Amino acid sequence: MTSWAPELSRFSGPRYAAIANALAADIAAGRLRAGDRLPPQRELAWRLKVTVGTVTRAYTEAERRGLIAGEVGRGTYVREHGDVAMAAPTRIAAANTIDLSRALPVDDATNQAVAKTLAEIAARKDFVRLLDYGAVLGAPAHREAGAQWLADWGVPVMPDRLAITTGGQNSIVLALAALARPGDVVLAEHLTYYGIKSAAMLLSLRLHGVAMDEFGLVPEALEQACRQFAPKALYCTPTLQNPTTAIMPVERREEIAAICRRYSVAIVEDDIFGFLPDQPPPRLSSFAPEHSVLVTSLSKPLAPGLRIGYLATAMPIMDRVESALRAQAIMVTPLMAELASQLIRSGEARRMADWQRREAAARQAIAARVFAGADFVNHPQALQFWLRLPEPWRREEFTDAAQRRGVVVTPAGSFAVGRAPVPHAVRVGIGG
Image (cartoon, rainbow, N blue to C red; front, side, top):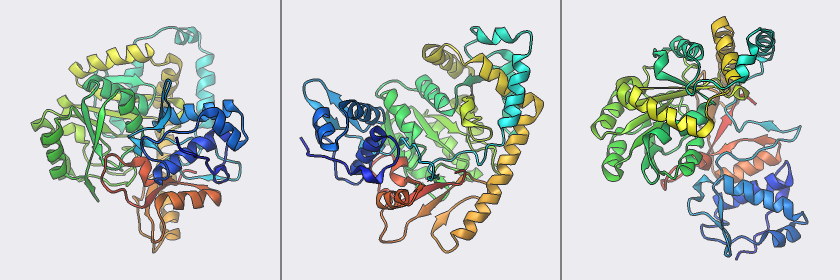
């Protein structure tokens, strides 16, 4: 058992969140290693001068994030796959903190339109029907609105090939549940959206990282991984890759799709940022439509609290998606689906998204001036940029130092999958 006692002064927010974040930081820095046994809750509470309930809540949060695991009669241990350590960190920012840790929409320009639309829906005579059970994949009118939304951004899809979900993360979980079974291998970019880690963990899938370059996935590395692991699916973000903002060229998309077809690997394409570029390339999934799932949501173009996402795929896969959605949630809340659909039909959603695109471009121009001379990668319309750190900075040390100065960013370790070297870099969101 270790004598671990975290230094909490570096972390803001409630004490339980500070303990969980300190645990993540110490794992990422190598001060805690896989298999280390943590102090009992009562003992750690005594060391930190907090209540046992605070430590219990901290351990629960750490276990939710995949940092630790408890074994009855043996105690609590650091998990082997501690590279999830900084995934989805609990950040409850103080009032004077600038939170640049998430790729949020750049401003809250949606409030007035959303409030007005909600009031209109509530005043309708048929409002009560939105409080009843609905179709698992969404009402026909809601699926039609979703298909209209995707078509506006260059993704033509028939409504019967589209499901309404509770956001992008839910779409990812549903897609993986439809395509793989516990123990199966799923591939992802070596640096990728940290939500795929928690999704794979929830479904007991084995996640393997694939090498990247400045254009995204490296085809030769993907083919080698397909031969070695016989994966069931590939998850990737070809357009404005998270966190690096890379956009995969059309020729490489064709090559990636051909490899996946050759090895019978389904493609889960995360198109969450597909609305941002002026001229996005054809979607990766369009090169293998019968073996692909495209997922997106309204979290970035509108607001994350709407929790409405869209999943488009071929019918055999859609049947399995429907079964997974029914098991997880029975249906998406009809009231939220109606709100999103009304915003789309009225044109408000498009106006909001266009405003986001213009504001993101303006903020990226500011970032380019501020960081001139630094080693950073961005796209003129992305919601984040990728900052490579100069010597002697290391990613966790830099993140801690920034937080002490009131700025929250996300270290590269949060996005890393597999054992390949993790760069000393941070993702900086411009929406905060």
